Image (tube, rainbow, N blue to C red; front, side):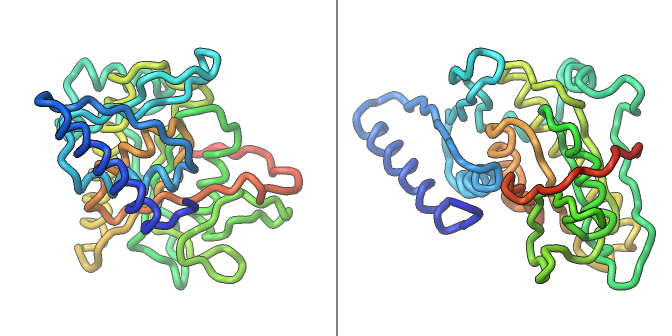
Length: 264
C-alpha cells in the first residue's frame, strides 16, 4: 500500500464485505481473523480505517519471531483497548521497561530554534530488536533531519518533508522503549502495551498543549518499531487523533552509523 489511505480504504471495504457475507450465512456473529502482510505505516492506516466499522470480534494475527515464524493471535480489536489499564495490566507492561527508568516515560522538550514546529511531538516506540532505532529517532525529532552529518541515513521519511527529506525540528519527544527484546506471543500483553502507548500519547499531547497555552493543536509523529498488530491497533485507537506513523525505508540507510548517544 505504501502509505496510501485510499488503498487502506479499499482493503477495509473488502474485509467489510466478507464479514457481511459471513453474517448472512449464519445466525451467530462471525469471529474473524485478519492476516496482514504490509509495511507498518500501511498497517497503521488500515487500523485507522477499520475503526469506522463496528466489529464484535476482529483478531489481528501476528507472524511470530519466537515460534519459528508461525502465525499466532496478535491483538483483538475492540472496546477493551480503550478501557483504562488495570493495576495488573500496567504492572505487566512496566516490567518490560528498563528498571532504571521512571514508571511513566517523560516528555522531553527540544530547545527552541527558529522555524521549529513547536506544536509537533515525536512519540518514539521500540518494542523489538533495533539497536540504533531510538538514537536515530531522537536525532530526527531534535534536528528535523533524516541523515547525520556523516552521511548515514536513518531510513525515516517524514511527512511533508522538503527536498532533502527533512523538515523543522519537533517541539518535544517521548520515548517508550523495551530495549532489544521482542514482546512475548501474548495477545493480552500486546493489547495492554497498545493501550499503554495510546495513554502515554494522550497524556503527552495534553501536557504539551498546556505548555503551549493551548495556542495551537498538538500533532504527533509516531516513530515505531515493533509488532505489526500493535501498529494496526494503534491506528485503530488513534483514528480521530492527529497522529501520523513515520515510514521507515530499509533501503535508505547507508554509511556507518554514528556512535550511540545517551538520552532520556
